[in-house]
Image (cartoon, rainbow, N blue to C red; front, side, top):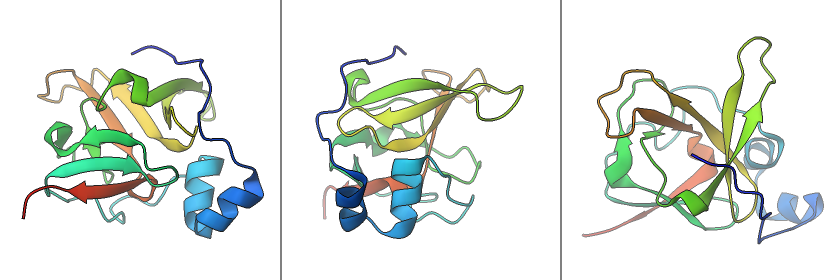
Length: 141
């Protein structure tokens, strides 16, 4: 993991984002809120396809990297490519710094990534992503 400081390619004003997104989507994607656990539409989804940023449509994750972590949010062990996401140190919880994951294309909040939790995945990472930050483009029938 590395930080991407190139800046977003999609830049809109808050008013423009509010026109594109629902109130809840705006709070999560643009204000870094978190949806309630076990409520998101993709938490238990096993459909094959590509997960895109709900705000800008950028391809972020593949279903082949999704796994069941039973944490209440969709979990992935890696992004589609490292240049699709950027990382920010999140110190909003006292004594518990986290790494925030944002869309590299539009700087929307996606969720957080955690390391060393012992999941049986190739990377030992858990990208804990809000369903509301994503759309799924399914493949196949």
